[in-house]
Length: 216
Image 1 (cartoon, rainbow, N blue to C red):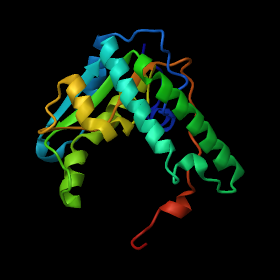
Image 2: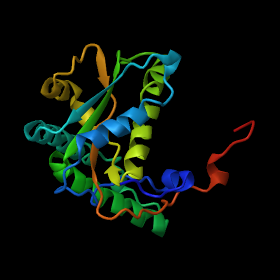
Image 3: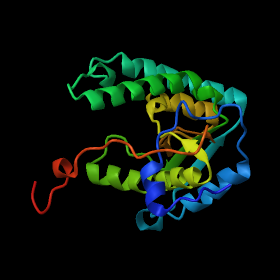
């Protein structure tokens, strides 16, 4: 079922879905393929198309990835600079961040139960390389991943772009049989139908604070 969303609505309401992911409802793999077929229309450097899409539905592998993600979340939240420890004094922003932390904790506990986990990958590695190479490397994958998220949203599916499992990328590669030496994982994206399809635009920074014309 496609939602009747305008382009602006799609772009402004594709949120990180965590607590609203329906863990009990299966997702047809044909629908995942449909979203990927749209995703790979995204631009890619020199038309390299070096992306690969690991779709994980096996219960044991999902649980194993969920454990890696939970370990990453625990390590991340133990750091002094963890965003959940920050109070800015902006009441609305601080409340929003606490909701994000709460939903993040929920996803860390439930990641392995999400019906589909997507691990988008790209050929090659960009470890300890100059910025220009790193930007080119990831720029050939990440636009397609966001296109997948948009395509999923338009079909009533929720996603959340996560990266904490990459603290243990080698372990994830071993779980999934990914050749780590020549394939980079870019994210771990849970995919499920959402509980309800209405999402609102998020509170974001004032444009005057972040947009620069001609000079900083």
